Image 1 (cartoon, rainbow, N blue to C red):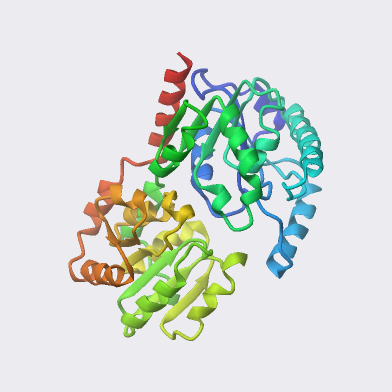
Image 2: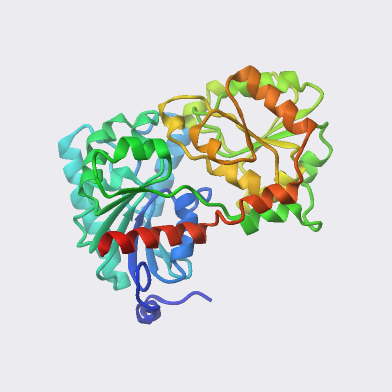
Length: 397
């Protein structure tokens, strides 16, 4: 049973670094797939209260049916009250105009968002808040909410996303004004420390216990892949424009007696690119699956892929799915993203031909799945929150 607002105000866990605090979290929509922010906040909610502010758009919407549907959902959600989605995690649906090229619109958004967030803070009895920003668009209001501390947790090269270049000035200002900056990849550290000397790197963790269930005897492989021809070469995640669809096509054609399984929704910016796969018979689009079911699908894979294109965005990425695959004990093959090279059990293809050769290698000599999973066990989200607490302790002393 969830606790009421008035009861929540009386809950004050043991004080300390990120303990017994009220935390604002500007992030993606709570109902989206669990990302690094979701996992971090779930750990922090054990000792703190979280006001999760759903996504402020990083780009202008298109006229696509998906974007129009998203606008409708945003307007509908705005009318809904603050909701406690999990103990100590409250969700606010803000409303803002997704345009950053006009100073007048940015100023309008600032005033409106400050009012909306402060109203929610008053309702929850928040005070002396820590603002942990994951969404650079929130730089418009960061520091204007009476925060005790401002932390920018940067996990992507956001201005390299399609349609997001106008955020550049807002994000750079956010870097400079933050008390602490956390980045999730070495390349991000190299490019962002120029804005703030108090910049630190914390690589992503993994929900190890969840994905480890792929190795449980009781976990059943879902029927829609159980009977597919092997090898089953799998992928789960957003099918966005940073995915190399030509490479997926080449992989499917090379392993034409096997199956390529793609789990995840197709992003608006990839709708045209993904059409290259339409006529490849052994590619199976399964759509988005609940997070709870992903380990079962992983159990059915013979090898898992991270087929990213190589560009400014992906070179700074730290793909969460790779650690999830490893936690499930899977052989993993990735394109040459720097952050996967720190993972001993991930094979890296330097070009398309080498990528396919590495899949052949993984299939020919698979490592023991329990051993692969055990090697990533210490990379938990609890451990990552521990790293964050250590950094904040040192920087405040």
